[in-house]
Image: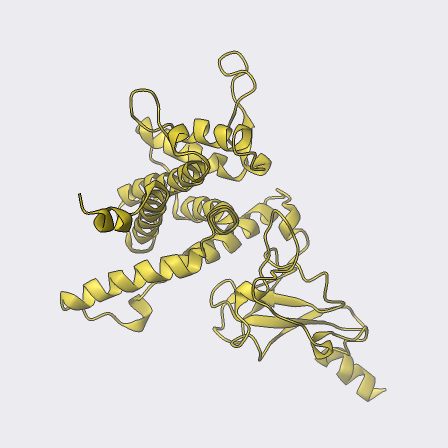
Length: 324
């Protein structure tokens, strides 16, 4: 056997990660381009499969032998997340619930933000397909809420970068077969998931289902892409170490916006932060498990990035003041 060839082969963790990314892209493709009722089924099946494979990849990173049953088959999602908690000691409390204490005493299973995705997969297995397009956005949003932080914190992967690579391969394949894609037809898997995440939280708030990350948030139209996709307070950012500096990013194009508060009426306004293209979103994004500023970028924030206590006045209040 050629040892150099063996060394080049991807290990189990890498194979599971690659398959998970592929399943996630395929699930989102059915959501974007699907026109049949049965496309909803494949959204759920592929996205749930991606979540399950990412969980198994993390377990394999801890101990590959735990991924397999005695008969050689791999374990299911519920047992995987239970082992991640008990054996790998990963805090996944937001995503689990107790299993049946009579059948599985002390064990955990998928719950929390992933429960709706799990239930949708369960319904499909029992031939019930009744999910609407809005249901699909909620399911994708819940999956994104978990995956965007999990794959970075536990697998060291940047979800956006990895999905963009697969999108690029897909678009090249379309070009190779002579498909002429307009710019509007070139979809970003990560952008679709990101916007679904925003839709999910809007749905939660509108129905009075309080989510701590989006309590009392405001939406603004992005000056870069003109989509109403800038949410403040931004649930993905923690800039508490930067005194008085208020930032929010666009869930559609990822441009950064500075948020100002009127000193008279306390209304909010958002303006494009011109430095965002030089300072990528990852420089602002933090681990949701350990909320401290990302130190991997080597950024040092100068004093000019801080807002003063006095933000000024909104246009309406400034007009009223000028008239006095």
